[in-house]
Length: 196
Length: 178
Image (cartoon, rainbow over the protein chains, first blue to last red):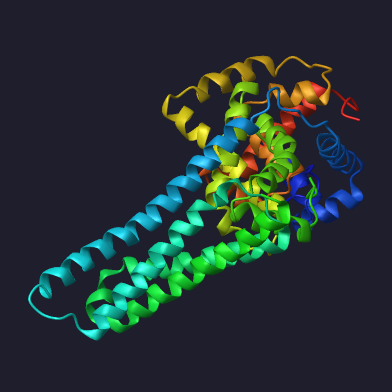
């Protein structure tokens, strides 16, 4: 590479960004024209960073809020309705299998856990959790509980679990009822504090 | 741009928003609406496109809040969503092949030395060049990150940046950028 030529814009930008070649860095140190061009590139960058921000001409928050509400309803409905569909299929299956016989104790335990979960879910929905403002700590607890609930729902939506480990399924339903109960507690506490 | 929210506050607001607290979601929106809109204005052709990007960005934020782990800057995460939404428009527009025309317009104008201010010169750049300049020089993205966002190569990003600065040099005139 010739030592007499000047640096290209590409080479000088690389020097400005701390990535220049050895030749370019040495050249800029000795060439006044390239040093001036490098300084100009730095000034342009500083000028760009100092340009004022734009303010949106219209408030988009109402649109975002409505979409967020729709998304939340959709997510809750799709997750829980999936679990409910699997549960309904299994209950029908049990009913067919045990039409002429007393249900096995594990089946009774499973149906009890499912009924408990359904009751808790109904109670939780009656609190209208979407409409409540939560403190940072309560919100963190709710987010954690909802994450755990999503994991349990995912396990329950996996039909392989139902076929392969019926005992575990009853345990999952109990866990689900417990998580919903905890969610109810958090929201009820908040409601009583807020006088709702 | 530095993050407008301290990390602890951002974590708390995100946790509340994830739990369905729309007041917390609004606080997040208010904290970032200007920076997102400004970024969108710099990366798109005008105010209407930027407003669309603002909405699309926050709808994506609502859908994906769980993906932010609370470890890095919240603004960095939201900014990448906004940039992706804005740049997605290039890909759609590219299918309609409008960009060569825009480049031709800029080429016709660039022979004339001008004394523009920086705002006007930036606005005059072709859309993709302007996006590369803004993402690299202002937002601090690397050429590799820009290439990934735009679906182009690293050398494309570098050459767009160099061409844009050559044009800015001509349009601004000596010392006009200060």
